[in-house]
Amino acid sequence: MKLHEIQAALRDQQLDGWLFYDHHHRDPIAYRILGLDEQSFVSRRWFYFVPAEGEPKRLVHRIESGKLDAVPGTKEEYSSWQELELKVQSMLEGSTRIAMQYSPRNAIMYVSMVDAGTVEMLRAFGKDIVSSANLVSLFEAVLTEDQIASHFAAQQRVDRVLQAAWQRMGEAVRCGHGASLDRREITEREVVNFILEGFEREGLFPDHGPNCSAGPNSADSHYEPTVEHARTIRSGDFVLIDLWAKLAHDPNAVWYDITWTGVVDREPTEREQHIFTTVASARDAAIQVVEEAFLAGKPIAGWQADAAARAVITNAGYGPFFTHRTGHNIAVELHGNGAHLDNLETHDERLILPNTCFSVEPGLYFNGEFGIRSEVNMIARPGKAVVSGPIQRELVRI
Image (cartoon, rainbow, N blue to C red; front, side, top):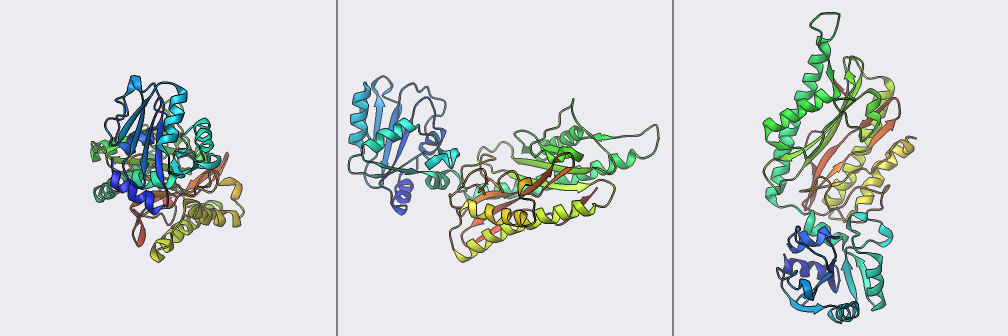
């Protein structure tokens, strides 16, 4: 637990304290930030208050009195609900503006862990409960130098695997021309298996997936080919590959997550080229607004980067076909607990912090036809933000 860093952050954000609360592991964020055992048995409520100044305070049930012994602070115990409420009120005495894993109107559901009844109780005590979203980002999404290095190491390996997959696909399709008895074909699932084999050789861990979508399947942004239901990739098809991985055997490694698109054995149609250009322009608009904010030292929230990308697509007349957020935080978890680039599914007011990683991935999807997504990752640093891998500038010719 980083007590001094937490207290410094509380003072910076003009908060009186951070109240952690759990029952039956409802709040995994609390366990990670406090360094508690995420597998421990918890059947009673506990509270842990970290004030901006002074010693933390613990409140635990008497039959589980050791649950917070791993963290510093004074300890109080309770048995009845009346005693719990009195002691919660007492532990917060002198503090008014208090952060919790709460989000007004559940706007950022990723940190909204505290139940409404507990918030009602605290408000009845005269407390102003505010969201801990930016605090959580600071302690969950900010990366170390080693973690940033692990992202770039994954980037180099994943990009090699992707290039090999395009080549393998092209070879299979070209061998399939004509009526030769040794005719070969390749399915979406076989491309996925080829990528997985590449990941294993490169020392990468993929979690699940990846994805290869051909033809109209590319219009399904969460399509997953299976052995039983996989399209054969043929000359003339449109293909989308979405792949993600991180260094294997390193629990603190950071993911690399990209999406590229291409056409098989032909040139793109005018419509495909137009849609790709629109998506790429939206991607670049989000990149630019983040780059400019960090260069100028100005704060920027996740929703603002999403809005920049979404404006390009909306102005082009394709707003209804951009059905997901522009990007997500990337950390030890593929979808991390920092700011997402989102002003659609949520209004993400979390700031994009220095030394964090996130995807930029606008897309347009036309059911029964095709879908195009162009995904890159960015690393934000003090004073600058950079794209961490190659940027697709044209559709791949397979």
